[in-house]
Amino acid sequence: MTGSLPDIKCGVGKYTSQLLRTLTNETDIELAVLTVNDTAINPIARVNHFYSTGKTITESDMHLVVEAFNPNIVHFQFPTVGLIEDSTLGVVRDRGITVIQTWHEHFDDCEALNIEHARNIDGLVYVRENLLERLPREIASLLKSVETRYIQNISMLNTGLIKEDQLVLDIRKILNSKRPRLNLFYFGFIHSNKGLLELISQLDFSKYHLFISGEIDPQNEYIQLLLETIYSLNLSEFVTFCGYLNDSEILSFLDFADALVFPFQAGVGNFNTSYLAALQSDTLVIVTDLEKTFYEEEVHCMHLQINSLTGINSIESSMFQKKIRIKNFSNWNEVARKHIKLYNEILIKKGQNV
Image 1: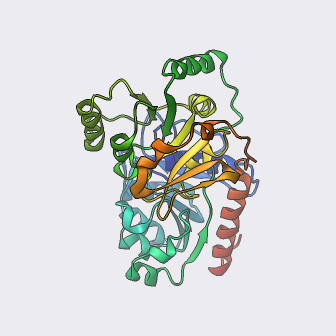
Image 2: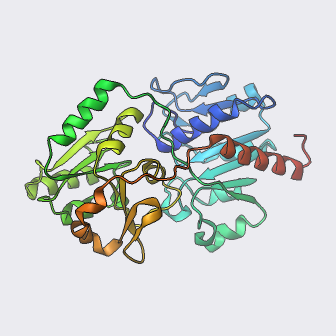
Image 3: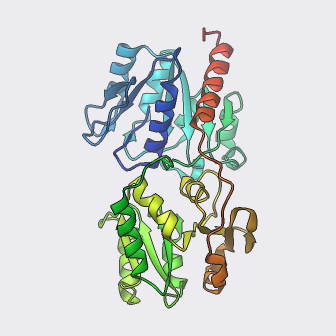
């Protein structure tokens, strides 16, 4: 179950969509998904689709799906743009149906998670490697008897896309128009923890032009602050907001930008799909690190200590040359197999047929 699916702009929704599409290749699994009622959602072939009656998935929505589909497992994804009422967990658990949840963020950092999620769960998938060690004591205690499984995130860009020639030419032309400055490209969510305000405040714009791709909500306080900062520092000429880009457009930027930058306030990790996608290109990647500044030659990645972002201005020009990386292409089949293994283990543990 997910609050959102494409084309709603939600990273977890896209993750769920990719997982569902891969699981459809399994002949012994029948799939259904309950999501918010939104015209932007594109149905997935061979998946039964159920929709909420409103913009939030409620207890009554879950009752209707359980009656109609009679699932063995209900797998919740948290958090998503579409909201899911906490009471839906109880509806499933009270029926004796196995509840699995994926937590895409740390418990304390996720507004969608609370103690009810830890009480109503049979299996937990997590994508942040140190999630278990960062759990609050009470939540860790509740999860002691729960099957937990770390399943690493992978890039969600469709690297098999055939780029349209005109699109490639247009993006190359846009980037070339900013020369002789070096073009930096950020793509992903535009939230305070992504460090864009800190980057803009410390970047030497006589050397760089910054492109930012992400959903632009003019009512969002953080985006308002970003725009006000850019205006007050007279940087409008040197920062370009691209809005939400599709996979083809992002892939073109990955190819033609001088560097890809992710100034996250908590550093990067294998949970971050934008960073993982960037490592599938041959372009320099610049990221933040909690402890130190160093260059990781094997993956052509410059790490800057979080409180030393000004170090980006001292990177030598030669570092911005393309470098062929060994690519670790996304393997959704492996991700799906790990999910199926967890499903089977939990059902066996509960004495149910698999």
